[in-house]
Amino acid sequence: MVKRLPYRRGVRGAGSVMVGGRPRLRMGVVNVGRLGAFPAGSEVTPALLRQARLVREDRIKILGSGEVPHALTVKAHAFSKAARARIEAAGGQVEVLA
Image (tube, rainbow, N blue to C red):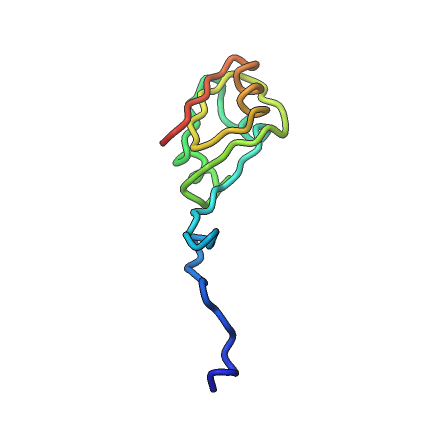
């Protein structure tokens, strides 16, 4: 019976991935172009992105694909260099969460 079961050492729950023997949390990604759906001058937080159904995960990374049409204050756990540059070029602010 043991030989019939799949070998599943290191398998964890759906919320984490094993990397080098330790679990790593998944990070949801949002492209900068998708942030144009929010009104100008608004504060975009991870809770607001989950409410808008752009991501499911708790930790969020903003990527630089697309253009930001207006100034926004974006709060996320990580930003790519291109995303940070495009948000600041549109007159917005970037805030990295712990």
